[in-house]
Length: 634
Image 1: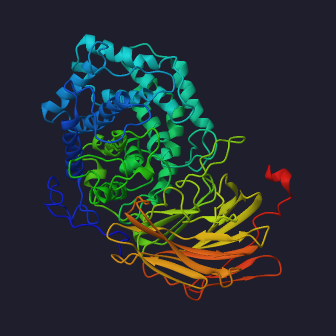
Image 2: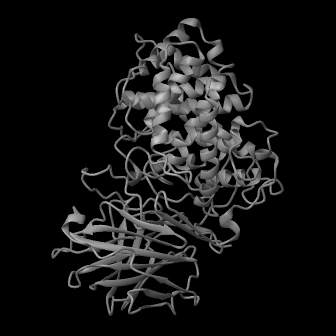
Image 3: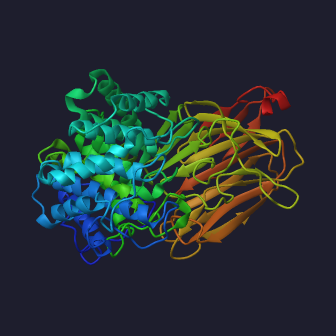
């Protein structure tokens, strides 16, 4: 199997703190529970130089978030406290006493309004709401070693600080679950709380459920990793806090949904451990593994224990080998290296430590099957897969030969419902994402179809209107310069064929394939009439775009860039430019992927018959009736 990324070797100079690999217990990753503990310790130790004297805040290097340095310091405490709590509880308190003492000291100082390091108060829709939930979770999981040993006065101040959540207004998104978690912890320690607010937050989660294990993060089509590391995770953790107070029917419903989701989530990891690069807050990185552990923790997973550990260890190892954490033991604001393109306004220097959620597995005892069963192959390791996900409007297609997972997007734009204005984000508006690539940021030509203005300005994709998603086909339409543009995707192996129906044939059109990136130098570019490709020299990963129908002698070009891609400093995208009312394009991503021999023909009935390079024949008919006019477009 050829890995789509070049991995540095496992050697003691690159990973001085890691134990030896175990090829018998973990034949795929070599990693064991000891590796997870070592990475956790490395992350916690790396924070020490940035702690304030009273340990109530961690002021990490980097640009502040829009909430400011005061809030960012609290974020450093709260998110690392979550990691510390998993490490403490997972070892039954058998950690160095200094770890417990420093978080006890931070709790005392942070909740003392007269202390110079005191925390900002919880207020409506303010960032301390997010951090309060991490503190509440950490206090619950580490309770015998921390909360139960705090002075009564400190416990009272902690409860008072957390108690500001009662009656406060949270953002109508995954933030509602922060209120659920915080107030349930308050209930567990006999502090004032609102059962009505807890119940209302859980009920709001039900409003966002779209079936198939998928929640949207608030109203609209907002599907991303928040489904994994928030909307499924917090109900499991809430049930652990609530215990007998939890309604059994609610707990069972959440477990059933998580089980269904994990049956799909397992397909989002490449054979090298990389998760599909899509959505916001990607600087949380290996937090994508959190629901895998949650499923085992709640007995709500369809995955064998050896698959759970293979997937989770694979993604932690993937990032650890590529500079996260860095040589200081810090998680930087980026993906592998520091990279601002994956950040949001709320991203501060300590934001990446939401990745602490990935260490949830340490709560499972050392003799649990997820730690003792031999690793088993994940689905991407052994078979080619095509999977339709109608709720988010995605097609997943992966190939075992190179271990790459590709996601075709015909349903997720993260826009609020109309009449909210359209706005493109490179992490939602693209036609496709993968485990081996990242989108150009800010917006580039990759995986995008644009109608070009006379000055060359490309049209955005804007609001995505899903049409269907089943089998190996998905379709949607969007408005481009006032015209309804309909796209049907048909996937097979490493290939995707896109059929674009455009109501005008005299407007220049540009379509891009996958952007490839590399730190060692620009990808190799090749082009010709009706085709273009780029190839990474180190591993042969190749991105190709070929015009199959309607493009004629369209120019194949390559758009190169620098410092615009999370996967490497130098990037390049193969692009076609031409005109036509019906355009059929083959895009391919992989190693040793043939593209010759493909073609497309139009039948009298309007169906496009496709022949893929391996001889497989599939078809794509019109996805919907013709555009009825301006009334629908409004």
